[in-house]
Length: 281
Length: 334
Image (cartoon, rainbow over all chains, first blue to last red; front, side, top):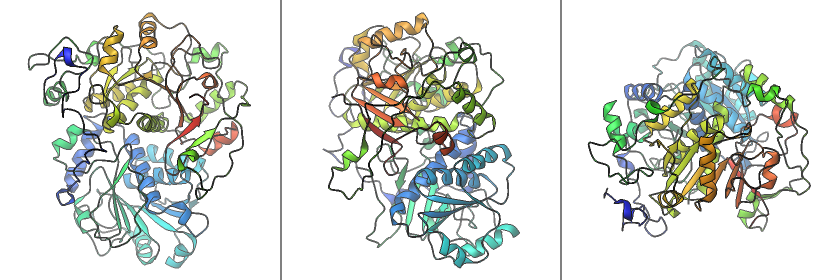
């Protein structure tokens, strides 16, 4: 970057400012260079955000959950929902992924949907998730006491399912309580939106025993397993990664449009004409 | 750690704004780290972490309250298929026959109760509304259109919660492509503010050691000023340090964007001689003094109010369009 002298500080040096978007479109991000991180890197990044960068878990969960809700809303607008005024089933696991799901449910409610939460196992993130579930309750979100035993029950009552059961820390196999949940979800015909990692997959690879979501919302950076994602929509959310952390992990990520908290990752070879509503300019 | 510090002093764009008169070079630290230099405020409520109060205890005891104003009116149902300019649906008319709530010591108590029960996880949910603030600012002053210093923004943070809001806002603005510089002379001695400050440092945001007293300097260096000095719990008098800052800001021509309440205004009656921001973003609900706002843009941000609160206090708030976290309020100002 050119050194600018004090006297000329108010003058704009040719080419030294950002190009006006209307005049010169920024070069399109090349999605073949998109970074995918390993489970180890994901853990380390998270650890650094909480220590070096002094973020609080609650902040990160909030931003991640909010992005997940926005991405879901973009792909599945509430006006297009046919069942029960935008009814959605949000399945929350026992760990951080579940925490993100609770936040996501709350924001989906504020965005006009009618989420129902399934949250069977309070995690060892007790105080955080406790508050998060209370917030859901304060918005009148119902909590299921047991999981519907058959897939058609889910299909009949809900328009889509948010899968926030397991995230990047998960290692197969799925244990008892959740094994049957995942088995049932595998059979539903309504779209599934997975937060960060399709549940049942590990962070590094797909699993035939896991879910096959239609929408995947990667948080902060896509995990390696996302390379094997076969669904329709892939979004990146969690717009909180500081530049220096990106550099440290050598992350190549597309720019977020304007002030949006999500960006579509055009990694899917979708032949659909129906594109999600993109409010970016 | 030291690597990161070096990277910070070689920030993009040459001289970090506010340090004029000094050429950055390898031997000079261009911006002193504020954490090292700033005397910290004593806080009587150090034990309280997370369950941040919005109000000072002493202010409550003094019996003074603050109004949460809302604008009562019917919002006509607007079908987006109507033959209407889509932009119009974003602007909600604010009725001139606004009905104001009586002052609610009750509201204060209730908010604290909710916080204690863990419904609001500390201030973090509220801080999300700062994302709304930053988005609103981004809508009104898109970074590509700013001319001074690559989207340079001066973010002035006061000694309380409004100041903390400014820190969060600055971080979001950086992610949106602006170049914020912080002025944060009085950080409270609490983990929340320590962490918010550290987060800003992690985003490579410089902190000024002193406020530029020359109006020209501010105008040349920054395209916008964010006023996050005082919020709705402000009680006069303003201490001299901040009085000087406000005096200077009153003279700059750079657009000022206030967080929730223009700093120094009486939260109910405003202040005709006070700061006149161009953009006001009310968080959660407009405060009574917002009726006297004469600037160009008034937005409502922070669509995160639980319904229980909304109903209990009969907050009549316009709907947020789509997935947006801000909605423009029609001020009737040009």
